[in-house]
Length: 472
Image (cartoon, rainbow, N blue to C red; front, side, top):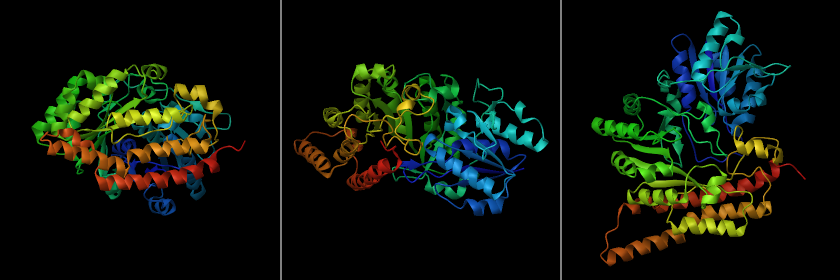
């Protein structure tokens, strides 16, 4: 059968720091290709849906979607059905798995829940053979009377998960980037998370378990990609410490020279600081750390199972090893001016140069969603990009957004950069040796680019709020 896989576009309100390869669709393509023709359209890059449909003439269209892409995914399905009502349309991805009822519309025939690399190929085979779709595990079938849920499947290993077929994304690969840098390859070495933070639903993907691939398999994949920059898609690459050490040793032994970005928890790094040193030697340049808040009390509220002490130890460990700290600090709707100023003082006092300030968002599937979904200020998921607020704020909305913007502009300010460089010059004059921590400081050209980028983004963000939010 002819299958077209689609990454839908983002809405015009979306603000993102990058665009990466659709790893889930590439893995699905591997399982499909022995028996079926597979094509791919990356619509954030290439909007030519009609031309692609004309060229491929698909029997089945599979669409993936994050929550922020829910609206555009529906629009794509509508356009596909408009082109040919006989095309069987399938939706999958995180949003579909968390609230499948959002996709129970006439333009979508079936919904894949969670592990699409298993369910979607089985669905395609069932359609080819004309067999009963209700017997395909991991699906929800749409209908006027509601969704029909097939038997749901739970994984016990990912050793049977195939490697991605990156040939389907070949023409787009030089466009996959983060913070204007790239191209990046995306690699998944593990699935799941054992922690149940109130604002995150990642743990639901594998029922709060953590499944890993063999280190040899991971390193072979790293060696196989052409890109010299690699981002790990794992929720915590260092969760299994012995395995992280083994991967590092294999990369070193194979002589692979690439740059890496990973996600990790501060409690792991604080307990095993040698991990950062080891990985730094093989090319680890950035770690995304969910610091989230600046008090132990608030960490407990969000069920982080972590401490402020671990966070601060990790900040120093990353500086010592010259690894950039992409620290995330949650901006809560109850913030007042004092809270914003305290957060900035914390960032500045700890000499952090690449933080992000996501606005607390009740993403579907989270504990926060169940608590706050009735307080939403919008009927669409277009603003669920962590850069807009979809909940009421203590400060007037315009002031709240100005304070968030001010955090970014303070961080990426020329004055802050100049002060730091003058201080470093003074240390050199005094004969003091500077360590690897100097690497973390954002280069001046990039700093100016970020400053302009965030100014323009917030100008658009303020407009979006008044377009998308419910009128009182």
